[in-house]
Image (cartoon, rainbow, N blue to C red):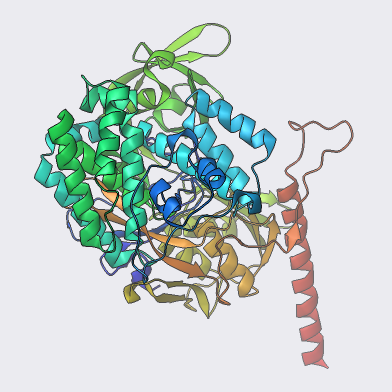
Length: 627
């Protein structure tokens, strides 16, 4: 196996699927089913290649429209202008005048599909309660059905800005960075981020749009109580808005065409706000940093020091924490899943439990993001978790420790008589290939004659790991190819003949199988190596690079390439289609709890039939030779 898939041109390649809530194996504050990886490197110039989908990171990020000033430049009717200025999301701003640079276009709302009433009502309810994670998930799911709906895109952008802001200011490592970084260092961080975007991002950067995002992120932040409490403790919400608008007005005739222009706007804005209201330059510059990354695509993101460290640990297949995945709610943290051998699992916490207090501090009072952040801690330290199970509050004292993340979750014969083996892959990480090999040999010893590989709900992980697993079954040819704006991102991963298993194969997929899972499924499908059973996969077809920030710690995740199936088909928005589509329909008198896993049942029948077909082919071949 070519090692460039794992460490290529000084970076690692991983592949995520994310959607929204809180990712909380290590309680990183990512969303449910989000996957974060990253090995512990000391070399500052290195980065990691990853592919994401889902926020779970299941989060599709932003594509903001240009501000009122730009809208006016194109003489858009006032009615259209008003439609885009809801909730003060868009701010008056910069003119993008370079003919070589793409401009954000304004589409007449009458020609744009409208948001459904139910989605709009639910979204407004979430927004009014400041449940930004739930709002983001709602808009993201709605966009899967209506990917070109401009109103949905803007609403998602609005929710994403608030969601990311809340996460940053609930993250103790980020707050520490803001307080300990000086003005010059923060400006160097922004310069470093802009350079990485210019050097590695998959598309040509739109510098005006990047600055627009930075200004919008700054405006939202200055209206946030959490932000002002730390950075503007003596300034009211009204006063902060006034001084922001003054800063923005100074930029009304500024054209942003280059990376240097983008840096100049951020620096001058920071200097102005520092002089007018005493706001630290570093708090301003980091909003420009986060806004710049958010302007790119759904899968690019800024990572605090904590998030970067946890990402690196998860690439290695372990982390320090409690071993649960959480979903944030207004007054509690909901347990989505539990690693059975982690501190939480061993302590009796189960899926569906509600955490109402952390270290005797109520979630309803400190906020769910802050509560999730409090669950981080040093290895060996203790934490008090208060659960509400409907029969009173139960408090557990748990010790944080290093937890192995299972990549191969279930292994066994699901039909002993026919010898149908089964392997459940939950993600793709550095240990996946070795764990998968061990599972294969275990099944072989038990009498496996055909195999089902289940990647349903698998959000992705290391690109190299998915290539290695596919290589166990594909004898020759292409497994996946990647293409980026930077030629270093162009690579074709091919199969090696040695170590190939010839067992009849079935792959189970669903709408939450993403990124690395789709690389694996597409390789099996396009090479006619097995049968795909289930539902069309998520449709995430991009590769992300994880870059450490040399100046201040933390990192950024940038989309650096797109990946293509062995036949050259793009995965983005398309996904991998199943050969046998599953319809989960309850039978009369059957409830959800008693319902058999339809996908697995069909997978077993398919595996059995593949064995029958293979045996018949072998008999026919023997007969023809004998004749």
